[in-house]
Image (cartoon, rainbow, N blue to C red; front, side, top):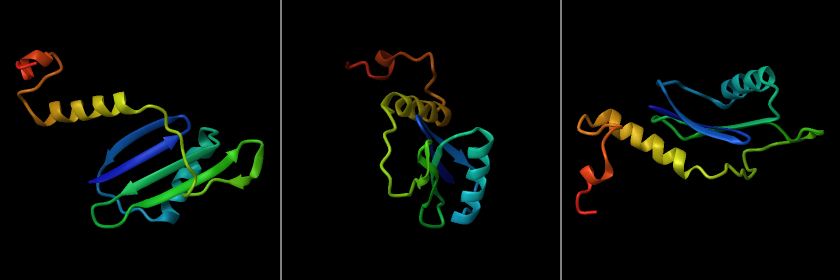
Length: 114
């Protein structure tokens, strides 16, 4: 399984992809195409393969008015509050793998002691 964490300011998401072997050169090329196609100032991605260490790639500019100021993998990112979206994602995964759960289930039915 490959986990892809993608940050396109100010949006953050996580995608689960089929097994793909990424290297920095391939990833940078693919991301540059996406960045150009959608006219994005910056894209930063971390890809984790089961078989190896994570691959990080940051392309674009820190400031759209200064095209000599490139982002790096060491830059810090504010990715907003993601607790709700992560909770929803984890809930969806639990519902997907556990047939006794459903979107219509009430919290009190799962935790009657509450």
